[in-house]
Image (cartoon, rainbow, N blue to C red):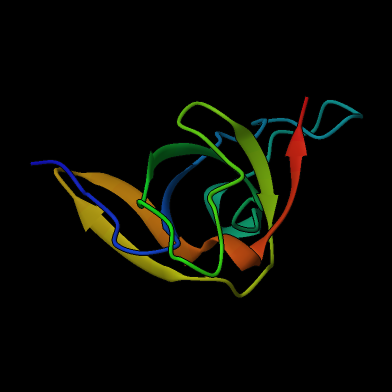
Length: 90
């Protein structure tokens, strides 16, 4: 199955976090926060009021409580409004 966002929404896929802290301590899953960095996997067509500024493959930083989390084919995604994207990581 494939997700196709509508309007000015985007589908984001979490970026995997490091398993170790900078000092080398291995972090269990319960100690990790959900990352705020994701990769854009699908982009809506935009609206008359707002054109889409991101494209598939962009790495982005998004607001902490943005979007709706969905699980599809054992993968976790976020469907969010483009306005919830704070920056594109270059």
